[in-house]
Each structure stands twice: as structure tokens, then as C-alpha cells.
Image (cartoon, rainbow, N blue to C red; front, top):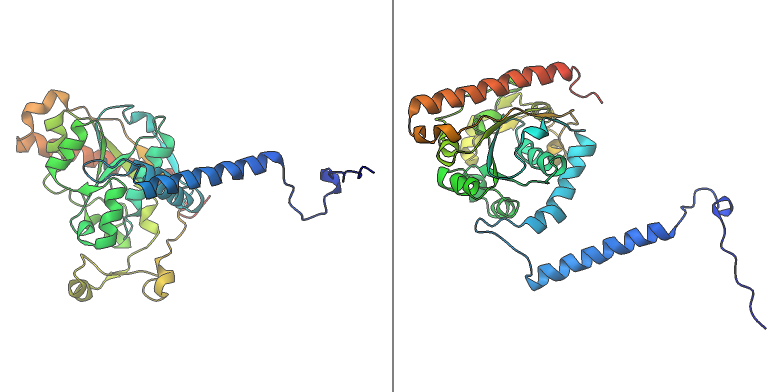
Length: 305
């Protein structure tokens, strides 16, 4: 006697609150599991590429970017403008304002370029020496494509057709108090301009609004900072009062604007001319400052939708 097959219930027969499983859903999860297992096999077998600087594009795309995307898309609700100003191919120097106590603006910038650019370009960040003196952070930074902020490395990367990201304000930018928000600090000696001139690489100024509000610095405990070997020790509305919870960034609204590129191919012979370097650095600084003002007008509420 042949058993009567059990009928498959349609959507109307599924009890309320019980998720409907479809073949498409199963296929998606099967694909994700298969990709995850393939990724683990490649990592265990060492079958992945790392460049001379330690950059691991597969790890960056598979692990780092998906984690950063949660902040970028859901927490900060980031909007990007002017992505067409970033070169489709070849080298480029991305110069941005720096702020936010912790350098989350650099990470959000890398995510914006990868997710919004039609070529999904990677940004090779130039980091401070302090980053590469910290054991775990140093390894993660290099895996994500960062390298020490020095002209030889920057010039080599740009000559190889990479996008290089630099924040000339350095610790003066991310460590400034909330009262000085969106006021650009000094740009140093303009070494980033010299690197761009030597390689004939276009400079793309970028303005980032939103980072100033994630950890508003109310005070800087300089004696404690010196004791710990840090450039500053911030006191914010949530840190150190809430302990580890104080490290959760406030959900400010972020806007990122890529400005028109500044060509340098006609100025390569002036890479060592202090006047040319200073004037070009000042032009980049003024462009970013003016763009910050316009972005702030677009975002009247720092924590709005």
C-alpha cells in the first residue's frame, strides 16, 4: 500500500509568527556557508595574496568591510557625494579632515570608496607611527592596507596606481576639543603635496562631517596621556564614566563629499619648491574647510535621519 504523501502547506496555512522557508532562502544560506568554508580553506592553506606592504584584499573584503558596513550604513547613515571625482583607475591622493577622538573617519572613508565607487577601489591609508607600534593594531592595519605615513611609501603606492589616503592634521585633528569642531588644524609641512607632485598624481580633497560628534572631547588629561605614552587622553560625556560602554560612538549623521581633483602632472618639477608646496597645501586646506561649511548647512541636526 503506497503511503499518502504529506501535503506542503502554502503561505496561508503557515501559523502566524512562524517564518516561511523558501527554496531561495535555503539557496542563499547554502551559498553563504559554501563561501565561508571556501574562505576558511584558503586561509588555512595559505592560498591568498598579500602585497609588499602586507595588504590582504581578500581578508579586507570578506571580514573588515562587512563589519565596518554596519557602522557606515546603519549606525552613521552615511551619505556620499562627488564619488565621480575619484579617478576610475590609476593613482590618486585622497586628503581629508581628521576628527573624532578615534580614527573612525579613516575607516568610514575606506568603506565609502569601496562601496560607492564603480570600481570598488581600496584606499591605502597612511597611519601614524603610534599605530604601527601597537602589536595587534599594527597587524590589522597592514592587513587592511595601511602603511607608515612617509613619502617613499606613499610615492611607491601612487606610482603603482593605488589610491592613498592621508589626514594632514594628524593627532591635532582627532584630539581637538568639541568647541573647535570642524575647524581645520595646521596641515604640517605639506609632505603629502610633495609626494603627489613627484608622481604627478591628482589630489582629491575630501570633507567628512559627522565624526566630530561621535566622541565629543570636553577635556584632555595631558598628565595621564604622557604617563600612558598617548598623544591625548580624552574626557567625553560617556568616557571614562561608563567604562567600556563609553567607547560606543554616538549615532551622528555622516556626510562625505569628494571634491574636484587638483591635477599635479604639470608641476612635477616643483616637488621640492617650498612655495609651490605650501600654496598647493593651502589650496587643499581651504577647499576642505569651505566644503565642511556647505555640508554642515545640509545637515542642520547632527543626529537627524
